[in-house]
Length: 414
Image (cartoon, rainbow, N blue to C red; front, top):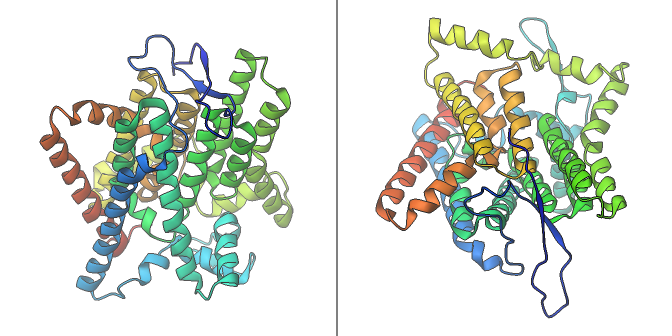
């Protein structure tokens, strides 16, 4: 992985309300073909075309799931809010922790402590103030968070590479094969929103906000500590390269970043009687552990010998594409926080055990992986507009069909 060789200080344009605070951009060195540039403050209308495209694609995804439910004779919308992990989150939101235990056919005791608390807490809060069922509240939070995430991703792309790349980045993220998880009651939308805005704050040098958002991301998913790692590494690098920055702001953000994830892990440990190891014991019952890729190797062998229908080969291709895109991201000399965030998620997916059909979902928040593709698409858009439209149309169609299939037809864990 390329380590940035310099850090540029960028002062934004003064507005009528006075000068804006100085911000930080993590540059990838003097050999970049296009150096980062700050996004224009106060111009959210620039993002409207990208956000409209994102909303259109994901709305089409919802309609595709509903239509497939109709064809399969299922309830039209029930599985949007009541699929797999969604049921656990809804139960936690309604009854709290420690009320639901499941014993697998192999004798493993699975408990609801494996699920992080932020999403069910938001569901419970929303049902308290609005006349909504937990399922409707869960969908409302997931859909709103997806939009917030898309806007944060746009701002990051705009700040680093300009409007064209930012629009392409959001468009590609909307059309990922596993993007159906953005339109069901899962935590990927919430995690992606917190991650994107935390990383955006890092790029702008807003360390306190970066740390707070990273802490919240750590309360949303087991992989939420990837944001904390990115914030801490970026803060450490910035502190070494720019000792003149106010240390209190910088290091306070870095110290806050891991507190959400660490706090929940220790709380689960205290409930189980093993403060340091209890959470990992709970996760092991779900066959979720870091085994340095042993589980991935076993899966690959089984897939080659026995086959795996549609879902598992596609999951393997998505993970392999993620590894390739990470290599391209490093070669592209992307900013350090984006590389670290995406790298930790790749490491968890490749090196972790568990159902391989769920691994594409774990990569969904890793939007920096799409930066090389977005830059290539933006470069060719004006020269080959018709071809770019055809390519994106095909990607979107594949995303809608595959998303409807895994959400409705396939019986593999999402």
